Image (cartoon, rainbow, N blue to C red; front, side):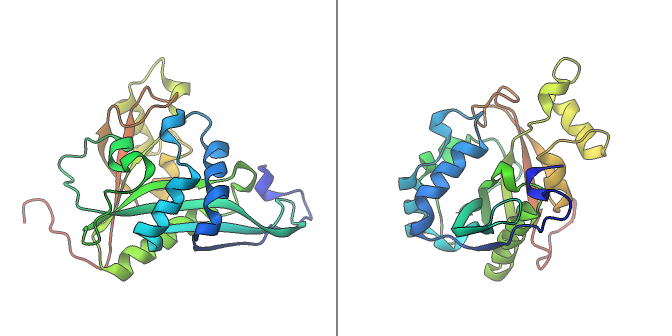
Length: 234
């Protein structure tokens, strides 16, 4: 049982997903540190970064606000407990290699292209105490709705593989990902992404500095169902 599920008889916390504003910037920076203790300091976004996002592409950043503590007890004011963040880019799916810190321009999202065909999913995170309450899916749904409203091709992202350390001594990263896709192994992040309609389009080495996979990440894609994508060979 996770903290977000609460004890038997307790009501679930009330949480809503809305477009982020500059007023959320400081709390979002703190959320980064709570959600990603494995990342190097240079990989984490700051309050100033979030303020820059609001200037460049405010529509692309969503925040989950909780009116209650995990056990359902009302809070004095809403708390920031989740983030879904990104920007528009053009992207070649046949050449997925890139470095996270570079594509997010050091956290500033300066690579945002208003005419970009793809939404780059830079960050999706939920406070540990609120996991298991459906916030991750709600944040993904908000991103998908934006992509469909803007008529863009879909969402691209690099994904961490936090479950890999348990298999490091007997599987390569590629073998591990293959088993996760096949449903033979569960990864806390990738399995959830697959359940939300993403497809694995390859692996990226040197994507991010983390303690899970020595820099490996999955490259995932979600295609806008409103658009036609030619099948291979068409």
